[in-house]
Image (cartoon, rainbow, N blue to C red; front, side):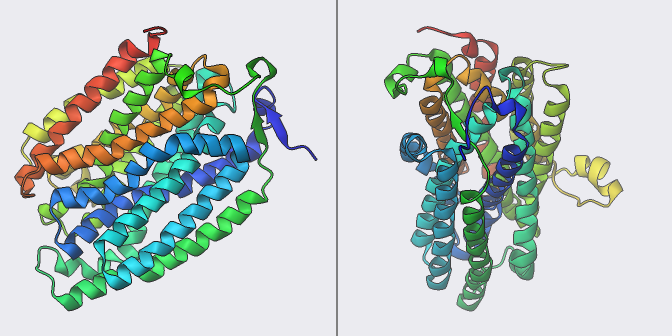
Length: 434
């Protein structure tokens, strides 16, 4: 039986593919946002500086720089479905690498495992994002991507909680202490069983995807002919500016989600390993608002503009506000039984609201009118994820020695990120020639 679909067939029969791909977005989110808990945890084990800790994120995201275009080539050769299964198999291999890294307490091996996980996730991103974009009309693509984003970011809420419950919670009494060799060994060994279980789970999912009824995407006849080249794609300014927008966006997103735990650790917050969940909750709220409001109330372009402006205002408040004050928590969280946390932490979490709609809005705006170039253009857009490597590194460099005040100032790196996103939203997406 032929399970190949052209893009004009997809809107009439996309329920099963959407459900399966939604599950893959959850898996992507779980493996990605686990970094927000892993970063401060390894920072404590190895007594890392903010820049060294940022390398944990850097090795994960830098993989995109040199594997996005090869990933697009692989997808063209093996298809979207086989590409998804292959990517999850790669995630299985990467998860297994964390086990010898923990047993030997070798930081370099942790970095290599992060690199391999990033390579596998790049392949998966290259397959699932254009798949979702092309499941229906272009003007509502942001809504479909927002639905996928809810699954992805919901996993970002769950992953830190799972990490805390299975691993970090038993060591909260060690926050702020100089660890003994025995305590370091115990903390490292606690990673082995969870990552073994994760590897087994990835194996099951890879087989499930391989034998699932996901139809293959096929270009429409009018898009036919030979696939476009990177050189052709780069002739489209709105695509190139979209890639740069995603670069700055992912830099901002990863800073907000994955450095918040390390910053909380510097402030002496014992439950630092769950702080990523706060950011992810705000992102889920943003995605829900996007689904409700786009396009019936607000266009993708206006939503992107609002997100950029909100990000700029929050970045200024984080850097120049009173980090020690707990006024926001006293007014919002504590009356409902929440934790009393510094304002700066909560403002970083609210960045999730500003970030939520950027990814789903930029993708359809950048892919608009590209036809046969969609596959290679998607590979270029996925390369924007490399921003997740450089954003935290610049934050780490600007954080200096790593005290709380230095790390607070490091968030100044968010300003140029949101300023460029604002430019793309207002003018960049309209450019059709250089």
